[in-house]
Image (tube, rainbow, N blue to C red; front, side, top):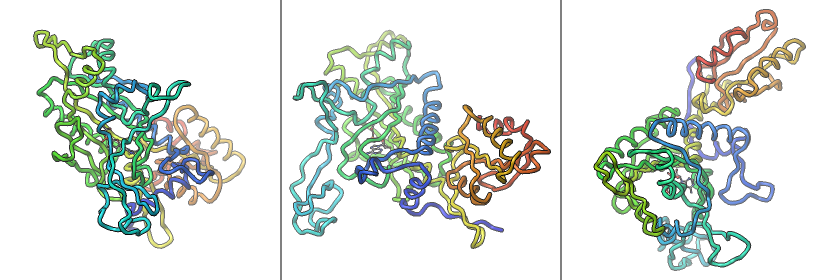
Length: 442
Ligand code: GAP
């Protein structure tokens, strides 16, 4: 029988699956929720950790890149130096009638308010800084004002010399970091696509000035390939080059890797040529010499240029889920939602399913399950028909289901069912680990 397959067509279907199956919940839901803040549930955090591990391994398990975990709170002067205090703003208008807020560059100010329909109700646009601020220490006042970082990158720039000298790095080399960032977005939304608290996976690659074009080409290719290796479909990925008007205040060239989400083509990752803007600014504001001494070039002293790759972890997770989601149909009765996630990223790798709650079968199933303890994430499910249990595992993207039946008690084998092809094969318990090693799960 042929299978008809449909991609995810609406974000609402994904939001509902994520809640129902423990991927993502609204923050503080029992209090009515907190706008645009989300909590990752048991499966969400597994998926997120797997994405972060995939990025961390690809980006730091190599000779030329080191990892870092800088603090979220930084010296407030760092944000003056970076330009965020002055430039990290969006134009904001309020509707005087319903008090809704909009980005002035995203609506037509000559039209009525999109929320309440009021006429001529908008205030004059004013620049709104997207950084969250808070107080450090017990005394309130301007001197104790600090910011929640709006990007992780600045923690890397201020540690450039620490990492370079402690790890004896020579150009070109990179520093990579995964961490939370905060932006008081005027119009957050579309589930976890744009939120006020999110996680970034950023890498600054320090290079000799003049080599930024080839570094850009190299990193465009490397980062595109990472998304492909994670299983995203090539026809849903494309590059977008920033025109002059789009460039951030620090960049001389920039490309986005865009993904076709159910809401359309949107930025998922930014690759920016940041010149020596940040190091020069930090050198000036901190009065510390941040120059690199190039032994390969007669001890020439200069500020390195920087090629940055910056991908939102939450946005990446949204792309992985959107890409994996399929509604498959094999005739009217045989419908299933299946997440065809790359097995390496899948939150649950294996489900152990006793065919019946019968003595012998239950004990053997528990033993099979216990063998995975501490090694990989497995689920044990006894409730409902075997067909229902397969569907439940399909919906969360579990690549393999192991069914233990009466024959297992005699032949010490289990049935392994493949999520995507739904084919089944008999595997001896003694061969199970090797079977999954070959599938890349261990
Ligand atoms: N350090 C450079 C930088 O932060 P950006 O283009 O502003 O550049 C990089 O952000 C990535 O961070 C974006 O491509 C996106 O994946 C993610 N991101 C930015 N703002 C976000 C938000 N409000 N919610 C979720 N992800 C966000």
